[in-house]
Length: 192
Length: 118
Image (spheres, helix red, strand yellow):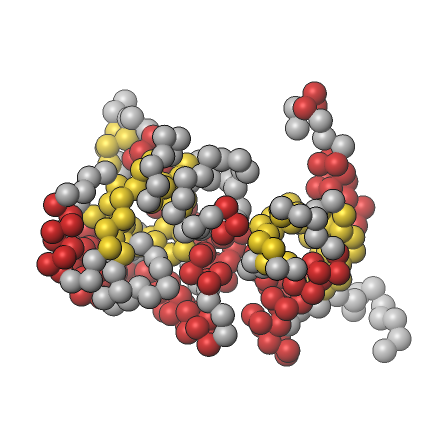
C-alpha cells in the first residue's frame, strides 16, 4: 500500500501505508517522485524530456492530461483542486496503465459550493473508473503532516463517494510490488 | 416519548478516537468541531446524532447510532482544525459498549509500555 505525499515524510506516525512516494522534496527513506507541471502540450513534451523516475503530471487542462496519459514516461496523473479530466482519459489510462490519483487533500481544501461540486465530480469519476476499470490510487496527497490521515479512514471516506476500495487496494499493492518486490515484473509474470 | 422497549431502541456504537495536535485540545472544542463538520457535510436534516462520552489527554470516545456510524467516521476524518490549530483525527476503533471500547482501545494505550511490546 502506497501513499503519495508532497513533502518528505519520515514515518513518525503509523498511518497504515507500507511506503510513500514523495513528490517534490528530495528523500532518502521513500520513493522519489517527479512532478511535471504543464499548461500546454508543447510545454509538457519539453519537460518530459528532462525527467526520470516516477513521473506525475499536473495540469489544469484536459487535453494536456490526455496527452500525458499517452506518454510512456508518465506514471500518474496527480490530483489538485483545478485538475480537469475527461471521459477519454479514463479509457486511455486503462490501456496505457497510468494511475489516476484521487487525493484527500483536495476534499480537505474544498468548502461550501466547491465541496458540492467536488462531491458530484467524485461520484462521476468513480462511476467512469468502474466502467473502464481504470487504474486509480486513493492517497492523502498531503502537503504537510496535518493533511495526512490513516489509510482506513481515507478508504472509508472515498467509499462513501462510490470508490471500489478493493480495486484501489489492488492497484496500490501492484504499485508497491513494482517498487519493492524484486521478483515482480508485471501482472502474472514474476521471477520464481 | 417515553422510554422505548429494547427491541425498538436504536443500536449504539462507540468510537474511540485520538486527536493529534501540537497543543492540548479541550473536549468542548472537539464537540464543536465535529458538529460543525457533520452539519457542513450532511445538512440539518441528514446530520447524525452523536454524544461525546469522554475526552482526555488527546484521546476520547463518542457515541452514535449504528446506522450512522460511517457518516460520523467521515465527518471525523474531515476535521482539519480545532480551536485554530491543525489537528490529525485518528479513529482507533469501534465497539458496541462503553466498557469494551475503553478496554480495547483507550486503556490499552494509556497503560502501554515498551516492556509489553506495545
